[in-house]
Amino acid sequence: MSKLLLAAKKIRRATCTEFLISLVADDFSRASNTYIGKLRSNFLGTKFMIFDGHPPQDSSLPLSCKLQQRVHLKQVLPRAATAANPANYKVATVSYELNVLRTRGPRRMRSTMHLIPISSVQEGGTAPTPLEFTNFHNEHDASTSQISKEKKQEVVEIGSTCTDFSKEPLILKNKAPRWHEQLQCWCLNFKGRVTVASVKNFQLVAAAEPCHNVSAAEQEKVILQFGKIGKDIFTMDYRYPLSAFQAFAICLSSFDTKPACE
Image (cartoon, rainbow, N blue to C red; front, side, top):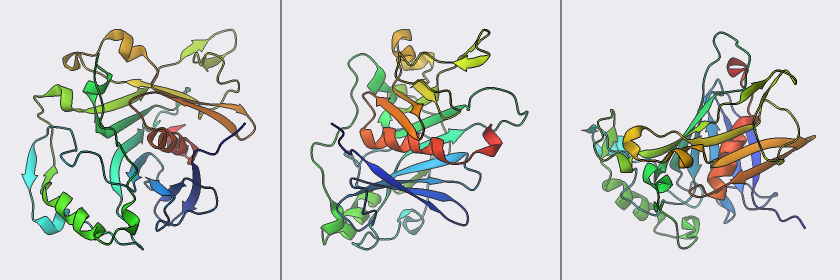
């Protein structure tokens, strides 16, 4: 009994690749009620940005406490959102490490969740969670909503000197695999959920520092795993604090060509 959760359409452009994400498989228009967001890569396919088509739950985010420099408001304000050009809000960044020495092994990646605090993986921690699905695409005051939100954020982050470590963004890193001498391959324990070897297979765990007060058990807990089970068939398993959209977008980044990372 399969049920469609999300669908994506890959669009190649001159300088990047985009994946448009929708609730249905036959409508990827950004003006549609079913549009959720998009994933955009850089030219090399080593860095991806995840954009949500809906505003974040808490307008005081992003969470990282950083050295900030004030700039003119016009430099911060994006183009006003309209029905034809709805706003996109950057919620995460996925980076793949360049394999300059061409060493053997799986891809190495890190995902920075700009709207999820590291405290969400601490004991009793929580992450901002929308209580309703608000579609700004059809609201006449979308432009006003966007401008009023951005006026609260007239600063641009340029450095890092955070003192409240619990408000730093959650960073996910791929779990290091082990080399299996008998099989002569890199192995991860997917607990039966992944059955076919692939460079796209990965598991992500929290990348925490001692100052974040995240227990060793939480740091070992897999938050997102993705892997192949057949021809063009993969499984995606995710847990709190990720949403289905965030997990899906991170997994989509694995499908873009990355010759410099392999």
